[in-house]
Length: 288
Image 1 (cartoon, rainbow, N blue to C red):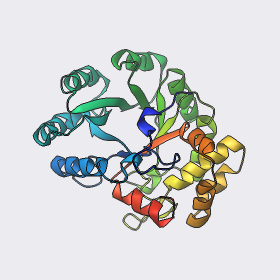
Image 2: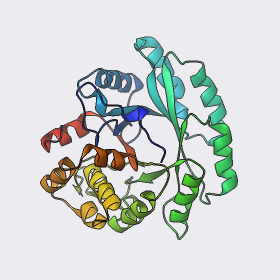
Image 3: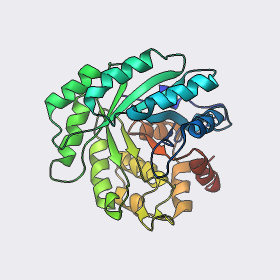
Image 4: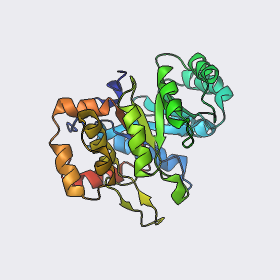
């Protein structure tokens, strides 16, 4: 199984294996209108802080890449910042973006390229992805959820060596996949030869109601525990639906290091609006 070992190397605080490099910095994405200078300052502070071992790459849209590079050139980071490029300008814009990044390797270290799939995830399109993105860069593809072919699309993405992406929220209540949908996804994901990423909506550790939107949201700890259960033949749906943070934390804490690493070989990471929120959530549950 393809692993994200490099992305998950333990940090100086010895972050537990279940959480090492779990959180990708998605602060440049909605909701809100984040200013690039503030996002860069916060990211570099987090990367140099006590919980740096929790932090994965910064996510940046191709349409905002120039802004990010301009700001990094001003602050001159001591080491290149790990980057996941999110292709919001179409697959055709990937070569130019990669060329720009190649010319600024003192500022950015490209780790992955992420993109939404067309409605029909066909082999020809996936072959183009492989042609445009070098083999040493992780390719992440988000099949469009819904319809009878969604799970087949996830398998097809994995067959082409790409990581599938699970979207867990969005601007409407309907954007949040049901427990059954996530359960179906995990049943497939646990059998693949590549990990998956999650995006949007995992703002809290434990399932509940988002006070800002009123939507019922999934929890990233629920998803970790559910992934562990999917690997051991236990009740995945129950873990996804649980609102008992103490019980979920106890189950996560009981995982051996090997079991935790096996979980992360399936569920690689998720994008968060800030690093502070997951730190506070995990500390509150006694997991950091």
